Image 1: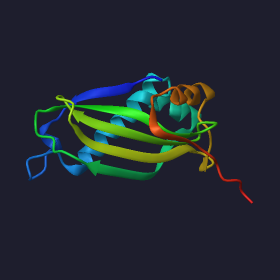
Image 2: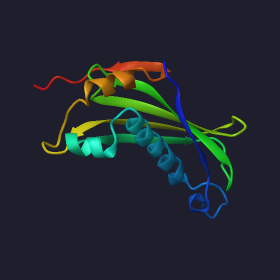
Image 3: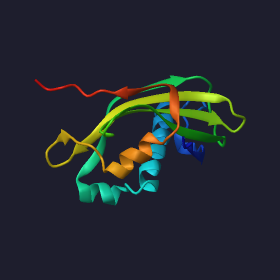
Image 4: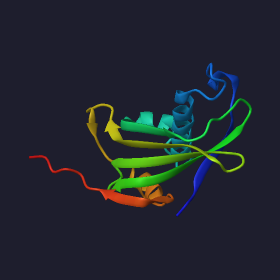
Length: 150
């Protein structure tokens, strides 16, 4: 299983009046890690545009555990908590940790890939689905079984 993470320096624009990182900034960093992962696996925004394919979120949940302050460095990881056999549907989890390793937040997102022309869900390229399946999995990972229409 491959570990994937990125480090960031928290900037002024991420702060709120309470002098810690604003709640939506946590989700912004997690989204950036997902986009970076896709790009690193050959599915850049330009490639998605050619394929008329994009990720879509159905659910996003954040658990805040300890505050992050201006100038701190954070590391945001990406793990797979669920994946359909064809890679179309997925559940990803991010852990945001401060430099000292303290867990600051856990972000869970559920989503899928959508065909931008047909506006219907469709699997990503097989190589991307395979690479995603090789990511570090959460302890509670479960295969996502797609519902049969009918």
